[in-house]
Image 1 (cartoon, rainbow, N blue to C red):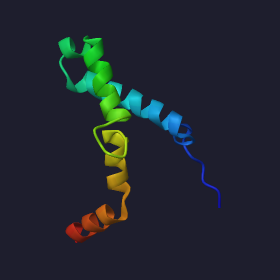
Image 2 (image 1 turned 180 degrees about the vertical axis):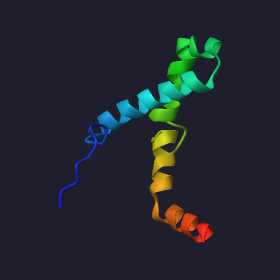
Image 3 (image 1 turned 120 degrees about the vertical axis):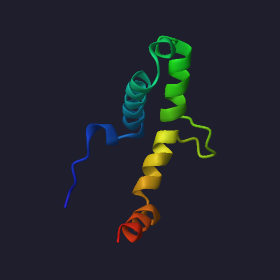
Image 4 (image 1 turned 180 degrees about the horizontal axis):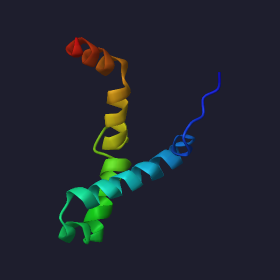
Length: 83
């Protein structure tokens, strides 16, 4: 069986670009306008969230969060707590 992936998951570059767009949108929604209008702040925060976070692996914070949520241990904990 073949699965159809979303366009943003077909390569790591596309995934990174997608996470940049999601990060940019989150920043505009969560921060006051004077922070959003500050381009260096916005770009730095976007890169930290999407691409090169402070992690050892070089993954962004969003990538690490998605990997943690999709991990088997996390799902098992949710199932155990939910019952």
